[in-house]
Image 1: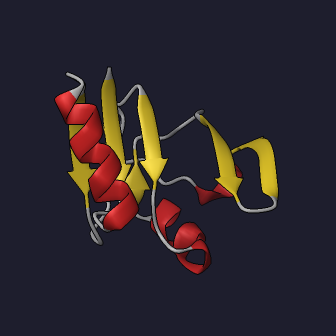
Image 2 (image 1 turned 120 degrees about the vertical axis):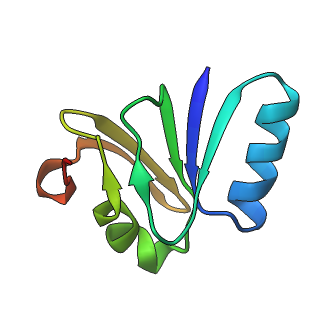
Image 3 (image 1 turned 60 degrees about the vertical axis):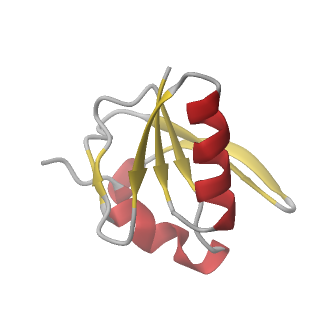
Length: 86
């Protein structure tokens, strides 16, 4: 599976390490964002207050859906006007 992780901290970095050891192809993105069009799954592992800004840094998410899981939040919606293609 091709997994892209936005966030290189304890959560994003730790999960990236585990998934790589399990044989998955992992792309790690930092503060500059990047293109996620080749990913089967994208994990945004940033502080809650930075999620909107982090999504704005991603390209290649046209038409994708996201599932957001945070303490007290569990809902599904499309990326709507948060996406940027390029």
